[in-house]
Image (cartoon, rainbow, N blue to C red; front, side, top):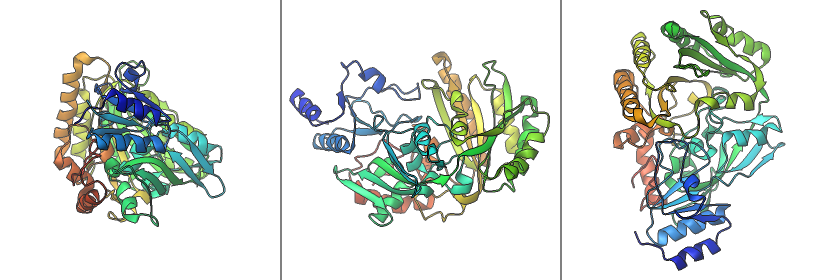
Length: 453
């Protein structure tokens, strides 16, 4: 890597609408931090972009000097790959424009938006599309990795609603990825992550969704096994309009008490929604039932408090082959011993429209009905880092006999290697490697769930 002279850096700043940040700058310290407090990296340069032209300047500057780069959107980046030690960060977090065409039911949104910001714009028109389960998630990372969310049973994943994207490639050229303009690139970015360039904006299809019926139904932890067995039966015949997640977690009141919970959403007509969710609300003896009619924006933000910025995080996940009684027993047993007072084990049920797409139609291959199993080890006290990481790894190992094929790349941590990459991309990996050679043969974009050319 060649170092850049002061003159070259001044020249770069003069060509930017945004800001070039370096370690002495007052804003540098906050700019290098991501949602996950475990990530403590020190880039040499951060280009806080205001638009596509800034992204082009950053790519060309880094490429000419062989400076390694990472790309940061507007959201979580739990794996920490958005920040690179000693390199240049292309930071899109200030790029938050969104234009909604209410008549056409589409939106063009820049890559620095979070889903909460996105939803505020589309809600004005009574429209929405599948976004993150948590509203502080960035639209860019979630979409490029596939994009599950509250509406995916009815309307598919985020990538199933993507109409086009503006991409700055490894040469600093602007490309439009769509079915018509560049179908190979469009196929690759729908599940292939940030391997093919910087996604500066996205065009999505929107749907008429104003309110949903949803909320949390919580049970004592002692009832976790029974509740998860009920959840397995409840999700077996779930209609497209309903989304049901479940898990074992800590009570949101700060008491540290362990609970078991169903997290529900229905985007269909009110009477139909009430009837569908009724069994989940009447099962057992709930200690909490927050299910109510609410704006879609509200349900997208319902779990935000459980994922505070700056908390220390270590995540592991995989798809389950089935939710057997033995697997349920392991979930309950492992959570009994968690050292982290903010941790959880979650099950995200895949069904409906998201599963009625051919596995090779997009780069995202995981189209079978089933469950994504996620271990969210989260804490605030650095003195228990080792114990919390050991717990998440141990829980993952204990559950491994029950894993099916595939990993959801958006939940993959920084420690994942080639086996995880193969699991994430599955039957599409060979084609993704070919397209990586086409669009990024030198692996310029490698701080991601990387596909080596």
